[in-house]
Image 1 (cartoon, rainbow, N blue to C red):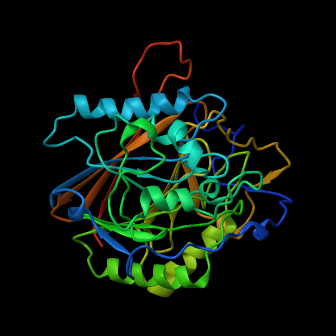
Image 2: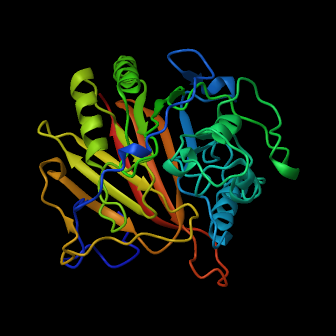
Length: 379
């Protein structure tokens, strides 16, 4: 394990997830889901987009990239991911795509802000971009002079029925992706990547229709083990120790109940929403460890700190937070993930690398490796 970017987790900061106390109920912010653009069960084979090896899969992952007050951070993160293509050993290390964990455009997912916050920074990114929507992507600006529905722009960019030039992409020539729904599964030769849509409220809301779909997806993905790993992605972080959000008890309950009902547990869970990097390990009674990774420092100018143990606004004392340990974090730099999956005799091996960029933008320098983790999924 690489050292922490701040100081090591000490008594001053929580080394477990926390909840933020006395939070108001904002479930009224829930937005109805748009109609799917594809057919149930909302699968997209990677081979429909590009050639895919059955021995190794490499891709980038990042969340919360939109920038308003200072767009330099999002541009630097995008540039550093693009630079990795130029230095990679193409046969082994070159990423095949970017998987975005949501909050592409702040604050209300408006089409007119996609150019500044997404198309322009990522115009040089040389691979396809897939995405799940974040709470800001799905929110609506009531003051916009042109009325629009939740996720209108996101659907146009990522959930089109055919790939075509987007009419609000400016001079980038960006073409739409063909994801079949706002919740969907990217099928690859080495993993099923299940993307959930957790809507607009601060701690996420997932209704029964999507819950039933998720349970069936877990069962179907479980039947393909050990030849394929199960990666679950959702925007709202189930576990976090940050001072802005705190852990999402609704998302923890949602996942654990789905794992129990389906009889299938994910191999790893990725999320954004929180503007930092955190790696948690949850140990179950059977001894298995499930990693929960937060990677939401992709560009929004404000980063979120880890809560200190003397802050009375936060608590680590909740039954849903038991047996979860914060293994590593970075609270003071923007960054992104590079995920590598490879086929081994026992099953699927996953290696994750988290890269950070210099936070003083006047300082020359490229992304630096800040954390590395490795898991072999054999069941």
